Image 1 (cartoon, one colour):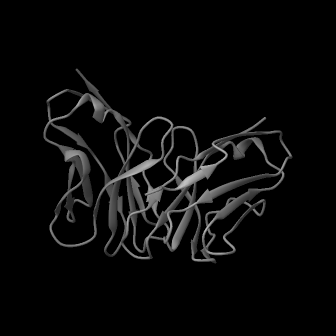
Image 2 (image 1 turned 90 degrees about the vertical axis):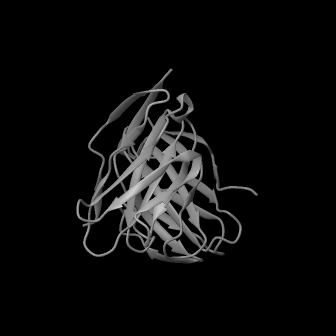
Length: 114
Length: 112
């Protein structure tokens, strides 16, 4: 079956621009996660949804970052007024339900802020 | 705060030799531990997990990992490395599958 997909795969934004990154999770997966992966580092947790409810957004680095999942399926991560330090790969993952289930990752969106 | 450490940035082994990629965790309580692999320009792929039960867990592509509570370790192992195993490996820990914390990664290079 289809895995997690993300779009766009690459995004170049000028500093100060707003960007929107999309994630399509595996069909039927209740939980959805966003991570930020800087070059040479492991993924860092940003936020988590269970269905449409955003249950944890403790990892969002600033109020310029906003995520939504209005219908409990597709999710969008929005970054307002992008800064150079926002340059990273943004990973989306989904899992079947809460608990001990593994997460399935998308290929990521590489954001470069110039 | 929960975290994992991967003490080696790079591991080099010859094809056919056993490999070990190290991971230690720092949490209280009972952790859920995971290993993921990342190939260039691809997302992370799940290899295996430890939740409870047998300390030796087997996963994809012939990999296995041993949970050692006394040493708070979860090292990834494979008896005979393949060149195609060359990739970036991440250890991760969580309690509740919400806030998963990843290590910095270990680059494995298997030479023919």
